[in-house]
Length: 418
Ligand SMILES: Cc1ncc(COP(=O)(O)O)c(C=O)c1O
Image (cartoon, rainbow, N blue to C red; front, top):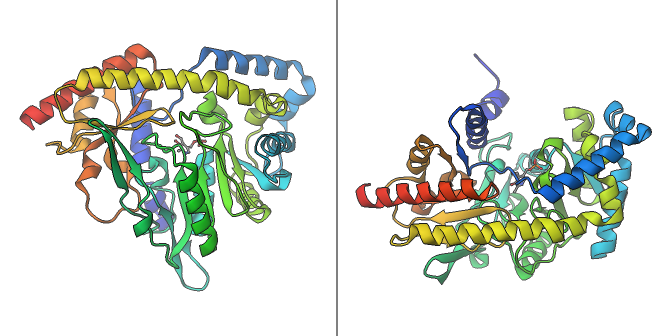
């Protein structure tokens, strides 16, 4: 079928599209598939219970339930939820945040689509700007959201070798060039796929650089503080008028309600609300209605800190232990897991590509994500991009363990026979 440039750009198969298709197909398959692929959070019993209680309370309150499902919110989203979030952030971090600093979107993925296309692409003066990822690997979901071509730019990270099997990427500030063609800088913190958490000093340096260039710093806080707080290091969140902080309810355990939260200067918030109106009239009201009381009382911070964070920390430690046990004897490296719920594995000089490894694992009913999708904007060739895998460890222990055993088996076979 003949379709427009928009159709060719957005409706062809993308990395994220392939991933979501594989996940969907796996769910339908009779044979059990070990799902270490997508970004699904775990079902944490205490969180599930808390959400169920919130839903019961909401259902019992005729006015609030009927409003949540029976009325459109304004295009920036539920006023009472936004007020509660503003209050929480003011209290918790002392940020000068008011209602006019917050807009909701139908999932934070949509926020990135809007923000990236606001700051990159063709400008009226004939110039063209890009989004800069100062640290890659970076989130697969960014790769295809640009409406024009040549939309991203990125540079190779510095690699710190922490011990024989552990490494960490750092921003190479000495090589970080921010020219007139950069419209905004973006980092995910914690980073999907690596679990890296930029230090407070690195974040401040990026923030100062962005400010000095007169461009915004977009920080993707989908796994960060104060919720869901899947952070295992000492890291403080940062916000100022030049920062656009994107949060989400998904990784707390609510990907189904599609609620993203953008915190930015009022000018940006107004633009988000206008795009919301065009694209979807208004963000959904059920997620905000479900969580308003938890946010208003501050209990969401305790839930994240006391339940969610220890849950994922334990799972991370188990997964890392299993990887070390299963991969002994071969050359492998794990990115230091500092947050989110992925381990990023690097197999130096792997004789097959990570895509081939992905295919072989899929044959054995293990779904992971091959590394090459996580380098948006990198134009120079780098063999490293074909030597890595992202493994989600949020699923049940038995599933993660069985998956890691099969990964180890296939990687050993690849090193032995190619
Ligand atoms: C780093 C990161 N940002 C954003 C998103 C989008 O999440 P959602 O649209 O569910 O809020 C994800 C989802 O996996 C993610 O991992």
